[in-house]
Length: 272
Image (cartoon, rainbow, N blue to C red; front, side):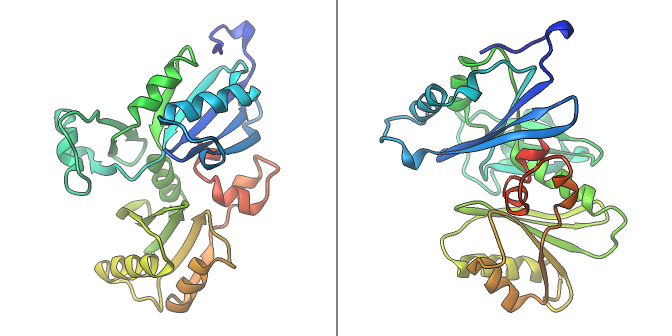
């Protein structure tokens, strides 16, 4: 696998990979037309049991030829709940672990990283999957990596421009969800929660709204990620929150040919 650096050899293709411990998804961008050409999801649960997560990636790269084609750029998105946002005014790079210790268990051996969030005067501090990065370094000449939550929050802040009301967004994955509260490009709250039942979800949502003094009869709740109106998660939220909808992804769909459900689920990946 090689990455082009010469202008005369450019393919105008970019590969983005969103990684978790249970699988990964990836997409290919046409950088000349700013569009998403294809995407695929890889579920490690369908693979033979392996000793290390790197072994699952090895099998996926063997099986999937798209991953071994030539690209001008590769970006890896780390998708976990080991992250937090820090205002630049309070940020010091030598204390990365200190920012995370309030919402996750950290160890002296952990490797910490951070992404600057353009236009919003804050940084996303996180723990990347070092073992996955090391494996991917053997596959690509070079790549950039970021945290998925940084893209999620920055895009939702963009959508809140000139909206003076407080808005709450919930982004769902298979076993966790993120709550993001914003007001006219200001981040009011971000948190990530593991969940197993719909009751777990509604408890955390109503508790967070209470802390923000938001009345469920009035605030606007928008859902995205792995969610649809038939989902029990949507239904229980509809029971307790009056103004609820799926996020409008029509602008995102202008850059690809995929369904509304696919754009909701891969909202982060398609904008990486």
